[in-house]
Image (cartoon, rainbow, N blue to C red; front, side, top):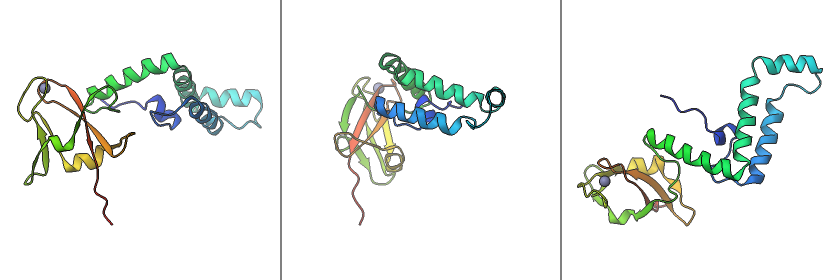
Length: 167
Ligand SMILES: [Zn+2]
């Protein structure tokens, strides 16, 4: 199953954007996707009726959802659920947070692991340094974070870490 582009992706926005950014992105996208304004009404209608209809509809739909605080909050929940089903999580909000130092590090496999604080399954959290680099998100409070899932009970945690600067 392929994930459809999210409303944020359709508008080219970050998940933490504010309302002004939503409005601006909507305007820009609409302008760039809208048929030439110099065409007459019928010609425009024709173009809207064919190829570009979907994208304009999607842009409007995305804007309707994201410009309303309540519907956006609901959408964020749905989006998080759908990301979860695909094995990753879009943000670490609301999850328990651990520091990378709390994980065991295996020098041979370059993997970090930890037993689950909820179901206590041994080493059920496991991820590699590569995963940190590929999936690390900027942590609003400094450094980076990654969201990981227990392979036994599906608990999600965020792990905060810093990346050593290479000069
Ligand atoms: Zn667990």
